[in-house]
Length: 429
Image (cartoon, rainbow, N blue to C red; front, top):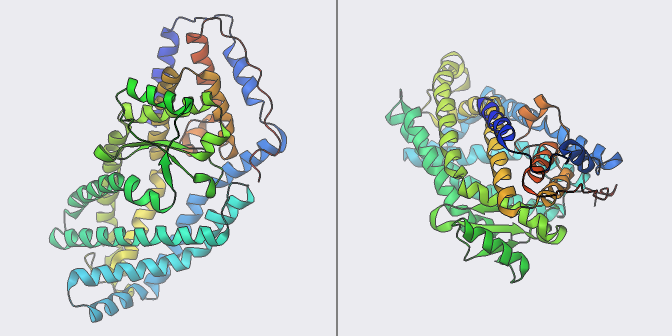
């Protein structure tokens, strides 16, 4: 919340410091013209989809907690541990096997919820392009990758817990930070291509403009990738991903095919802002600090739970791999409580990238237009508290107003633009 207030203060200060280039240009009226392009059933559908998403993390956490409590109460995690110890004598392998079996069981039990939130709900709102079989296949690939990576992480963390039972959360934080950077570096090259085909963006005015913007800010632009996200959904997106030698610029075919050149430039300028402003490393530092707080709290809460219920659960100590559901309970609740803080960090990053993108692309109306297109899955006009708590990006209203203020301050003789209304079928198949 402090980050949000600080960002707001900077925005207000810079607005007062700027000398209006067009005192006759009405920012609020221009903003309203854009916002009013979304009306009727299309706006109701946008609001319903996004507002329904407010409850998904809570219900998902409650379902996970219920499953973990049942696993503990029925001593299933203890039985899994006993089976693992019986099959493999080496401690690290027993931890790995326990983690694998626990993950398989948890995934099977939460599968109905995953299917509803990941497939049927998306299909209901016209955002899903895949068949159920295709979606399920991608989920299987994602689960296999997560299973390998998370098992490795769990084995390392439990080794740290055994070696440093009192201060394990300190080294555990370092392990998670290194793991996070490792995944960020490898994902663009080895994980993303498992789900989409990446090809070079064809030569032409769009590529030339992206390359010019990238080179002007020392962003590597030897390769600009286009990927076929339309096979999965209708969502428009782009990114500058990777770390060090794996950094790359990518945009999806929805952005290319459903947007104007000005809109594309606005989006790519925004994405470049994340790179130039160092958001990747700032986020790593923030998330590492947040992980440290969560692991510290877990190092106090989990032993207390085991002292009270461990005997009935068949869990001997925190270093016992049968304690995995206990760690999961603690981290699930703490993650849910940390959501507003994480949303605030991301929202501040996105706002800074918006400002950067406007300066680079110089397309305020293109930026406003793409902000309205994102209303397919983002509520356009939330209340201030609603936006602070639930939005991990600035709302469409916030973004359009920023674009119109930029237009007033930087475009000589700026004129009011009267955009056409979005169709009532907007957001539907």
